[in-house]
Length: 280
Image 1 (spheres, one colour):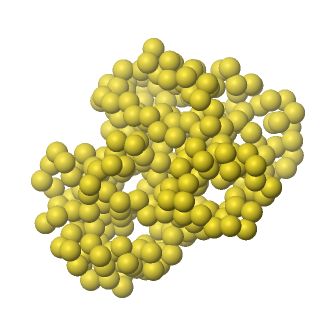
Image 2 (tube, rainbow, N blue to C red; image 1 turned 180 degrees about the horizontal axis):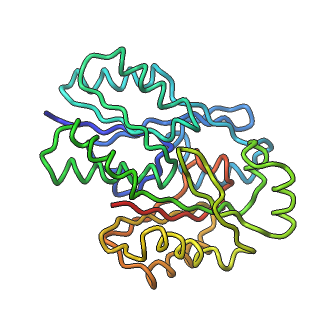
């Protein structure tokens, strides 16, 4: 049976993964200054960062609709594919539920997988799914079972360089944002149970790269040789150079991927962000 992997644009994946012929990304909708854009279709990531710099209002993301999923599911099941659909966390978006409802209304073998992460964290599951399609003869159902086994080994840490976006989106209390910006304190965030959580803080930007590497090493008991690492950034290329150097110096991994934060995550964090993730 042929397998088609679908993922939503809350999953930030490396460019070399996105080019896989059996993989398709379904876009969320981004509303900026009253105009709607299809994520990754109407603009590139770099173009989105530039739009943010000149926007007068905070971007708003809209979940993928039932019909978007229904059309994709019908297209591929009618072509003889079993479909694996990976979504960003159901705790932060209704996209997963849209996919489940569309699946229930579509004939064929369709498997919906809630990554319970966003961005690079969700991307780890897409990377693994692609690896399993290429390197094994597992069925779609068996691949999803393997993805479930990744949950305990998947980690994500990220740092937004400004707190303004988190404040405006209601994900951070005003007083915390005010004090953080005033003292130049940057929160180090992760995801637990599908929701964002601040797990540490760092003063200024100089120590962010080393702190992120500290935390990913600690989360893996200082052993990353069998792990897949993804490091990511937004518009802040100079900051990313420091993270890339720190990873090269301190981490020995099975594979290190690089990607950039997409519009879904950066709509809530701002365009300047650093992130690191790991998984088996």
